[in-house]
Image (cartoon, rainbow, N blue to C red; front, top):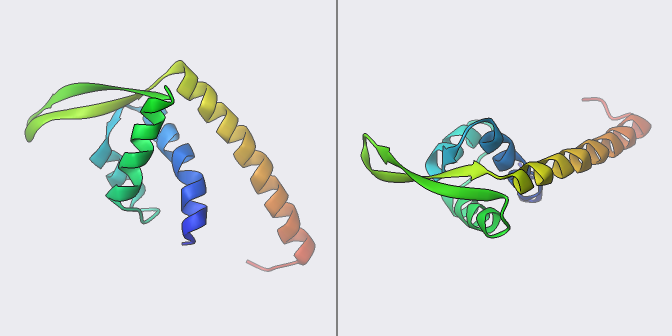
Length: 107
């Protein structure tokens, strides 16, 4: 898959997943990689930025498999960001779909 497509959609995907349920970094990677191949080196810097921008907060939760895990929770500002990204995504995909229809490319 095109790396630029992934980069453009990853913030949106991460916020969508965390809105549904708080996550720790590795759990996010496990949820995303069956559908989109990504590396840990992509997710953790994004999570740090989302926390810095106040879209996510963090807390620690004990783990039965080792040390406590850092969980990410979406904030009210994060929900607003997600809604904005959703609107942008819909507009973008509608425009791309129109170009596809006009060019008569068969899928």
